[in-house]
Structure formats: structure tokens, C-alpha cells
Amino acid sequence: MPHDGKWDARKFAYFTGKLTGLPEDRRAETLELYEDIAEYVETRFSLKVYLPHKVSDPVAHKDWTPAQIDQLDRRAVTMSSFVIAMVNDDSVGAGIEIELAYHAAKPVFLLVEKDKLDARLVSRLTRGNPTVAVIIGYTDINDMLEQLGDAIAETAQKYTRLPPALDLI
Image (tube, rainbow, N blue to C red):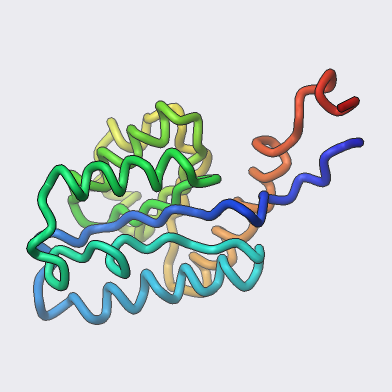
């Protein structure tokens, strides 16, 4: 039976963005933005979004060891359907999670403010990673969500289609 091109609702999307070293004066606003993005994806695609700050936030869960965080995030990235990466701020963790996605053959959607993208303020190593499906340069949250939704829908067609021989099973 042919695949319908929708993401497997039993799975989830993984969201990554700066958490460690996030300035206190931007923390609440940034986490709210992450949650708004997750809510949009969950509503439009009936797919849960894993938000690390809800599970292992470096402020709220400061007693977790680096090894525990590595194990948790590594597992979550590899089990996800795809990764959404907010790369407006430098984040070693987000870079590692993008590379984990590459090794797990998961598509990544990069989100970056258009002026930062145009000024080439996002690492070429990040932008050039082969698993990056789409780089979304946005002007405001509505622009970002519209582009992200379209990109996720388009990419579902590519990443969820079974090879022809498996369509017969």
C-alpha cells in the first residue's frame, strides 16, 4: 500500500536551541518562542515535539550530569522523525544535535533570523551539514511558522515514502 507522506504520529520532532548560557534577561522570552514553535508543529502535524528545556533544562535540572544529558538527548534525537534547530545564538549543544541527526539520517530544519542569515552569522559548518533539509530565514514568527510548516509538509513526502519494493508489504 503506498505511503501517504505524513509523519508517523507515533514518533516526534526534536527541537534544539540555545539553553546553556542563555542570558537571564532573554530566557523567558526565548523559551516561550520555543514553546510557540512546538505548539504550532504539534497542532498542524499531530506530532509531539520534544523540548529539552521541559525535561533537562540546565537551570531547573542543574544536578543532572553531562553524561545523563548526553544519553537522554542522543536517544531523543535518534528516535525522532526530524529535528528543528533554532540557530540564532551560538550553541555547541545544538551543533552536536544537528550532527547526531546526520548520523541518524534525520532531516533538520534550521531556523534563523533573516538578517543573521544574510550577514552569514550562522556557521558554514552548520549550514552545510548534509542533513539540513531547509534553512529558514525569517522576518517574524508568523513568517517563520509559515515557512516551517510548508517545509515540514514537503519534506514528509521525501523522508516518509517507502522504497518501491517495500510498498508491496
